[in-house]
Length: 233
Image (cartoon, rainbow, N blue to C red):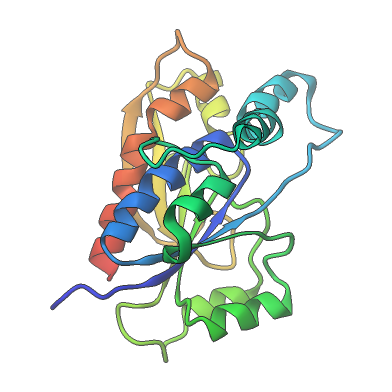
């Protein structure tokens, strides 16, 4: 069976590792003639965050968007040979080969119409901070879609089922685990509970921070994602 080209929605959080994964995956997906529809989901800092996690969240989720991206965009120079791009640069470099948008509410009725209108029947969540409604889940799992063009998966930064939820790498290091990694699984109405497609264990380095450990595992996460998309399509 020949491979099918897909319109793929990516729901991406504001954290560093998600942006690294997306940036590196986009080039391969476009080369394979898929069209990524990238939806960045902003998250405001939680004032009730535990003090010991505030520094982690700053470097993981705020520093990139509040400081790095504005600095790079202000220079107003985009090199197509660069390895990584800001949101604005993604639009400039790839043009109509992808769609980039900041999305405040993933469950808005108008957004569901947008998915339907553009025939976006495959979806990937990469640390999206909002819970998908049943209507969005049903859209991607619709049995009336053309076979091999419809799936809805989540790339979770933790080994399931042991490490569901948030701050998984932090908890794994607190528990003195030898390994951590990413898990790719189908999305259903329950948090991190859909059937597991694949996962990859990588050694934890306790001479490095939580964020650094996650970043050095990015390439293995990309392999999980690209391999699954190739097989599912």
